[in-house]
Structures are given as C-alpha cells and as structure tokens.
Length: 27
Image 1 (cartoon, rainbow, N blue to C red):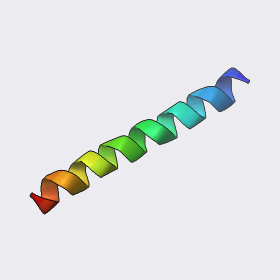
Image 2 (image 1 turned 120 degrees about the horizontal axis):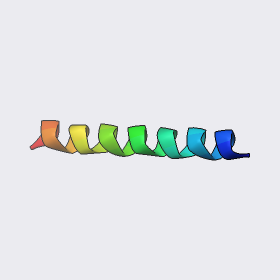
Image 3 (image 1 turned 90 degrees about the horizontal axis):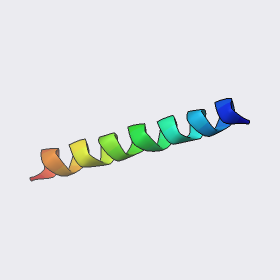
C-alpha cells in the first residue's frame, strides 16, 4: 500500500512541476 501511495504522490508532484513549467513558458 505504501509503495502505491508513494507512486501516486510522485506522479502528482511531476504533474504539478510540468504545469508550473508550462505556465512559465507561456509567460
């Protein structure tokens, strides 16, 4: 269970970083 949770959290973190990068590129 812990491994699955860590995997999901990591995926969300990567997704947030990608969104932040996209916003910076658009500006």
